[in-house]
Length: 243
Image (cartoon, rainbow, N blue to C red; front, side, top):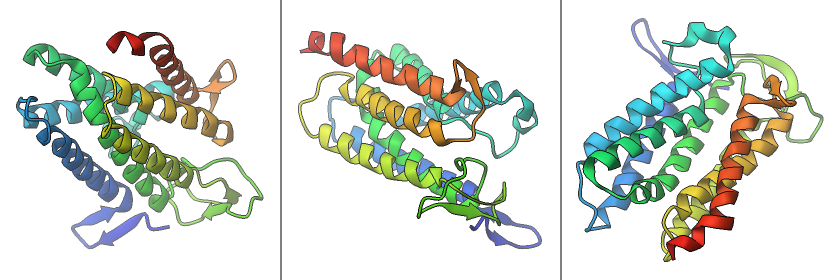
């Protein structure tokens, strides 16, 4: 593991922080690239990016503290974020921005969906390199890994959950980029993201070390179930109404 990429007397660059920065830059680039190809979609993209980032960070922090109240001391630190909180914050930012600028909400959400999962995959690379505590339970599977030099070290052989998440996020990204090239319906890419991401996260939580707090499920698993149900309702009931 490489929790520290570079360190001097005055500068320390951690792998997690570096990958978060790269995730933001590539996610931003991909989203703006999507927007620029649609000549009928005109708005101040920089303002939207600032709102998405601000609301996303606030949502990620608040959701993390809500799920882990014993870690409230991390509120103003550079660690301790919830991807589901970031997603919720970004949705709220999109709602506010589209309301103020009279833009259909789905135009933002559908274009942002592949950018969001791309950024998530890259951020998970940071989790893997830093060896934080997002690994899974002990296992004897051939690909099990230990993280003795990680931020949250363990000598046990455990499920490398960040690697699983990188793989499924890459698959979701490829599906969404292909979907955006077809005549998909409003909100289809967004709810496809919720469904696929929710399904994968729901499954992966069975082998995570997160505390089970609601009906035998962790907070993240409960959030994933809500994402999955929301996507199911859209595809079963509402998708046809947009045709």
